[in-house]
Length: 285
Ligand code: HPA
Image (cartoon, rainbow, N blue to C red):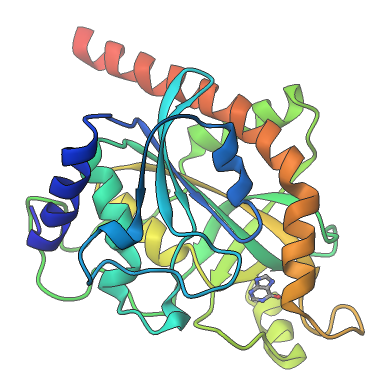
């Protein structure tokens, strides 16, 4: 195991032997979901060694919350770190590696995003169907440890088709409206210009943000099943006449928190059923 990841895992293991099945990254404004967790343990990022990144963004807390949602063992990252904060790609994805090492088999990411697609409004929840990560460094650069994964991992179905189907069904049964789209991670921290958004639109991109892809690439590489949900907090630059502010991003997050929570509670239970039945099938094969 990577030495730095091992050090983090050892510290967490001194506090708890809880084994999560599903890891959930809570994006801007969506951190309150952690309050629905029937909590077993909590580890603040500050308890971990210095190389473990700590969010410098306002309204992003920094801790792992472990416990049960609908009876399913989960670990939530309440507060993620971003590449634009000045952390190295290795640091940005370190929490994903740690959660994987603790036992998580599935990663659900959430984020706040600017909406490009014309069906989106601020407050829209959208399932991520695919991504474009070419504008940020690839977090797998550097020597590869084959103990973890392949040198050239396939990314054809990075956002697991079956998980997407489950989340769509969960949205339907919990009466949450769920759109979908292709997400791009840009380096940030400045928001985009209208010309950049026009360019992205022509490239087939629907959602624009400053997180997620580096994390999902590593999770997929590590063999996790991955899915993601964006909350459209604002029209992307130039789509409405108004400038984009961090306040509107945070306000929309708070407004959508309840639908997001319903969707997650329902999805987590169904995803867990799926991964457990998948295991039974393969052990009987
Ligand atoms: N652009 C980039 N990142 C974002 C946006 C945006 O418009 N909204 C929320 N995160």
